Length: 254
Image 1 (tube, rainbow, N blue to C red):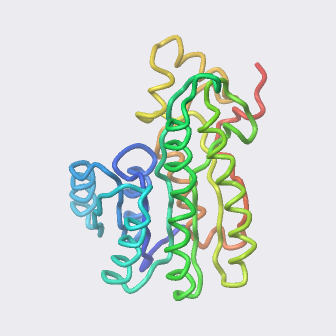
Image 2 (cartoon, rainbow, N blue to C red; image 1 turned 135 degrees about the vertical axis):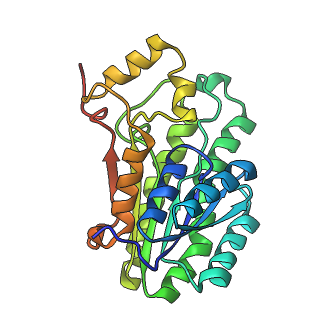
């Protein structure tokens, strides 16, 4: 049920963390993946790893804040594979962490642009391909931050990630008649470069782990498996959701 055989998928933020894990997992389940991020050297390494295991991957480097980049990704999906079936719009940044009174407008705009506006631009250019294919799956990486929990010093991040959930709900309503499913994936604390930038000492990591009901943080592969589910036919009746994959951080008070 989780096979992606003969499917084409775009994955942004694929150079590291959840995006990298998802690219490898999607490819191992049969998808032809187009991996996108800013760091070309890391993308090339990822493509090499996927191809060494018999998978199919193409790297395209660029900035998700650029509409031209999303246009290029869609064009390459058409050129290389004749269409698109799945997009995992995962790229994002933590942004500047500080109280609102100390946050500059430029810092706010950078975080909103990278985490939220990029999702709009992605959908704008991916949806026509999914419609042409007769349907498909759009997945956006949101967060429990700004949805179930307010974290101090994370205003721009929270606003952007909450905004993605609103975007997902509207897209799901708009695109349901075209057999396009649209969902937000909400990870909890995850052992990535971004996650480690917050949990950057043994004491802080232990604190973050304890916030979760499972008393640990996730490995990127665990979040990638949830993305695989949303992209596959196993989730054929799942759309418009804010899917928590957060180890119980949203409900824990101990």
